[in-house]
Every structure is written in structure tokens, then in C-alpha cells.
Amino acid sequence: MSSQTEATFLKLVNQHKGILYKASRIYADSPEDREDLQQEILIQLWKSYRNFKGDSEFSTWMYRVAINTAITYLKKEKKRTQNHSDTPEHFEVQSEDYNPTKDKQLEIFYNAVQELNPLEKAVIFYFMEGMSHKEIGGNLGLSEGNARVKLNRTKEKIQQIIKKTGYEF
Image 1 (cartoon, rainbow, N blue to C red):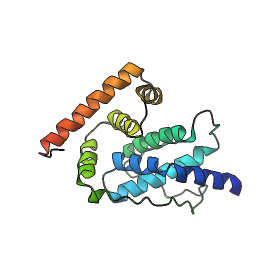
Image 2: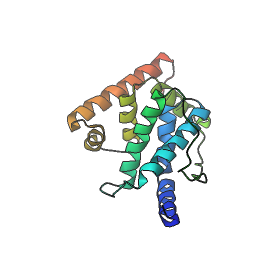
Image 3: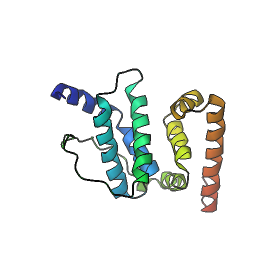
Image 4: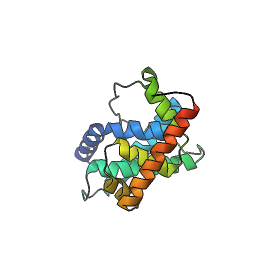
């Protein structure tokens, strides 16, 4: 692909880099795993970018790729090859001024999210991005009503997990 294509891709990824941070924070628990997952998502985004036709918003497409990559990444037990020869090695996403250890509530929330199943994690991820029940359902292949029920149950589950830790918001 041309350097113009690469520049456009990097600009779009940097505009929506919060998706990378949230997806990796929800699906990976250690800083090393989060970093690895972010790299894996970037690689998958780049590999499938040529197939992005603009039928949806770039961010919507990026959400799907991020979540699918996260779920697949977790299924593989770190048996990843380091052979990514078709991927530019100079991809760099500007870091976000964000340190979860400074915010105890956020840390407790993310710890609770680690106990959710992959579908529940996806529902919470989309909810955190401000998506409507209809959009959440559309991204996950659920009806709007089913997405609403799944979201409410997932929120309740998170509250129960947090209560078990003895922490009150």
C-alpha cells in the first residue's frame, strides 16, 4: 500500500486510539498483555484496512476488529509468531495521558470486568463508548431489546463483583 494510504490509516487510528486502550484494558489484565494486545489489534487493523470500504464509520469498523482480535488473541495461548513482515514496523500510536493506577475506582471497575465472559466484555466496551442499545445490538448480532437486557444484566453482574471486594462507590 502507498505511503498516502499508510498516513491516512495512522491518522484515523490516532483519532480513535481510545478504542485500543479500552479494548486492551478490558480484555487483558497485565500491562505486558495489554501492550501485546494493542500491537495485535494494530496489526489486524492494518491487514484488513484494504478491505475497509467506508460503509460504516471508521470507529465502528475499528471496534469490531478490536473486539474480534481481542477474543481471538485470548483463545490463542501466546503461541504467536513474530513474523509480521507485511506490517510496517514503525506503527506508533501516540500515548494517552492516562494512568489507571491513579484512579482506584477505575482500577476496581476494570478488575471486575476481567471476570466477565467475552460477550459481556463486548457489551460493556460498547456501552463505555456511548453506543445506543440499537448500535450495541447491531455490532453483536442481537436485537435492540436483547442488547438492553444483556447490558443491564452485565452492569448488575459488575456491581455484584465489586460488592464482593467490599468496595463501595
